[in-house]
Image (cartoon, rainbow, N blue to C red; front, side, top):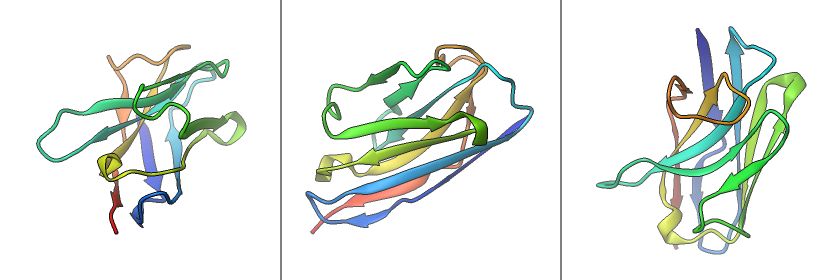
Length: 120
């Protein structure tokens, strides 16, 4: 089993920044990918960003140029730096772990989520 714990959410004004952190523990293998998804009220969960074992990244079009995903392999951690936040970024953000080189949602593990609210 793999445990995923997120932190760093909160309330921020439009144009502000937040940094989300995620730690994975338990049965962690050397080859794994991680990512961030989000779910706004009344909407489906959507991919925000993923990062492969080798550091290749993918981003949703809506966050390109504003969000940056990074990972710390030795500590089994992944981060999401979010800049120039917009009200439409408001959602519960979930960290996810996939025991594969590139992230795949099938068989992935999920954290409990952290709320991000962008409002003035």
